Structure formats: C-alpha cells, structure tokens
Image (tube, rainbow, N blue to C red):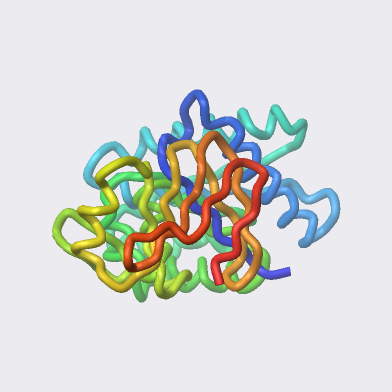
Amino acid sequence: MTGRIALHGGGEYVSGDEAAMDALMAAAAEASRAEAPGTAPRIVIVPAAAARQRPEAAARNGERAFAAAARRAGTAVEIAVAGIVSRGDAMDPRLVEPLAAAHLIHMPGGDPDLIPDILRDSAAWASMRRGYGGSTILAGASAGAMALAGSCWTPRGPVEGLGLLPGFAVLPHDGPGRLDRWRTALPGVTWLGIGEQTLLIGRPGGTWTVAGRGRVRVIGPDGVERASAGPGEALELG
C-alpha cells in the first residue's frame, strides 16, 4: 500500500463537515492497520497556511474535529500538532519529528502562498514525502489542498505547488466566477473544483472518491468541465 492524497474544498473542522472528517478518519485507520492490526491512527496537524492568522486556533480546531470523528467511529486516535509556521520551523528536528510516524498529515487552510514557501526543500517536506512513499495520507483543506498540486494560485500571482499532482491546480470553495479569475493567472493547467466541506481522496493515476457535502469538478485548461462527481462517486484524474 502506498500513501494517498486528500483534498478538501474548505470549511474544515466546523459543523457540517462531519462526513468529510469521517472519511479522513477512516482513511487514517486503514493506514494504521496497514502498519499493524490494532494500531491507533496517528494524525498530525500542520497549521502552516494559518501562520499570518491564528495557527494555534487552527490546530486546536483540528484536534477537536479529529477527536470527534474518532468518537463517531468508536476508535482510539493519537492527535499531535507540528507547529511549523516558518522556514526555520520546517528545518527544526523537534518540530519535524512527529511527521515521521503519522498515518495522516493534515494541513488546514489559510494563505495559499505560505505552504509552498515554508515547506519546499525542507526537512519537514522530506519527512512527509517519505511517509507518503509508504502509507501516509497527505491531506490539505483549502490553501492546504492548493499547495499539494503542481501549480498554486495566490493573490500575489501563481507559484509552483509541492508537485504531488503535476499539471493540476486546486480550486477550493468552488463557486461562480472564481475559476474565470484564476484561469487567467494559471493557463494550461487542469483544475479540480472542490466544493466546501467536500473531500476528494485517492492516488495519482488511480480512482479517486468523493465524500462530504458537495461536488468535485474536473475542468480542462480551456475551462470546459470534463467530469463531475458527488459524495460516494468516483473520478478518474488520469
């Protein structure tokens, strides 16, 4: 088993997001069982995208939401926070250490330029990639999801994402008008339009599934919708 990617359209950790959180918890439990039967899922929250705002609050909200999902699932869980909110933090062995043992690493939303800037070529990202090469799920919501793709829109202009989905960009909070604005800044990429409180989870080159409240759209560089799926349905990303 290799790791998976989970992309969330935003509105994470709050009321209404239970279905998406439950899908994340189920994926983390599956990854923990792949390590050893009876192992509690280990989840690490990385609030890097909230560095300019209130990263501690984002982390606390994540801890509460994952704990609630574990209660709904009737499973034990270990939840930790890796307080990586700067380039220096991303190179700090004390902060990086929890990432190595995680079954699921979750990056909540915030500012889309921060995660690529903080994590690229860092010890933290190297640890996350090693886990992803095994069974670790790398998950992001809103700005956290945007950063995992090949390209990432930011208010300051496009930047290179962390590259787990080359040729793709993520459009969180999918709604009227936003795609037209963002396509101008990022031509030539395929867009994943993900509704709020909606999760897309899978492996590159494989089948992806949708959970949560809304829909996921695959939109070509020409702006034409190629595919769409709702909760419980599957998508092929190519």
